[in-house]
Length: 278
Image (cartoon, rainbow, N blue to C red; front, side, top):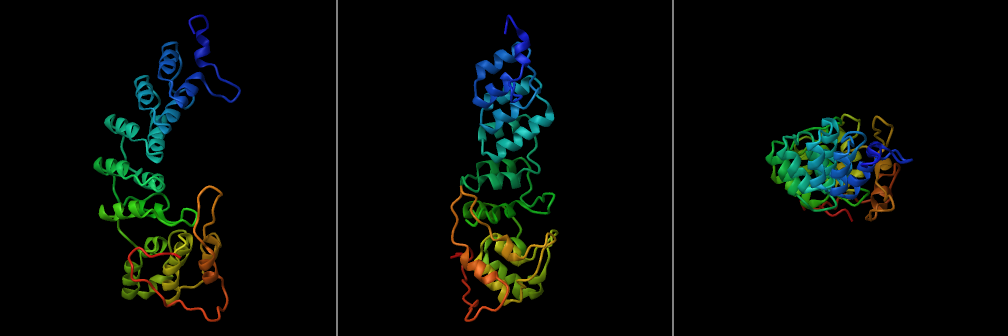
């Protein structure tokens, strides 16, 4: 670097700078030397790599070397999603807002059973009922996940913090008691439509919530209803992507398949708040 300082900004065939590689791998001393030699903290995405991999010391170094604010905000989101508490703490201490990130944190926490970052964001003003561009609140993040159902620890945490329920998320999460109460108060809710055209039965299908689907159908939900993309509830039953283990989706597929079901019995409804889907 002393002999050829231009190397500090050189890129490899994949377009990565040496600073990107150092940030990605957590090599603080190398990153520091590159910056001192003239590397640009915003040339590509070093702060994003450091944040998503949990290297708070390198994130701090890059912030101190004027990493672009847009990249820093993206890096904060990556740290939230990847459950990197030291990076999240650092970004919050530097004044970055957690607004709009609670749903991302809840989604990222679903396989990790960690509420630390959720609590941190709430402590810094995040709204447990904030809506994303699709109109989903953070609790919606627990619906589905390749048929494996919601993370009940995260779901319960959000409920305890004041997450509001509607007929869509109660159906998708399999929260039977609240769903029963809503339908008893207004049975027409089975025909309600979300902004994307999904009915409660679509959400139950997406979450592989057999008992919720049975309850909705017994209350008059239509298996033939289509959302704005033309999907039937049956089309939204989640399958494994080859990584996440799923529970059996065949029972809900059989229930949702249009047409007569000789001998079908949809009346066995569990009174449990968090119902079993099996």
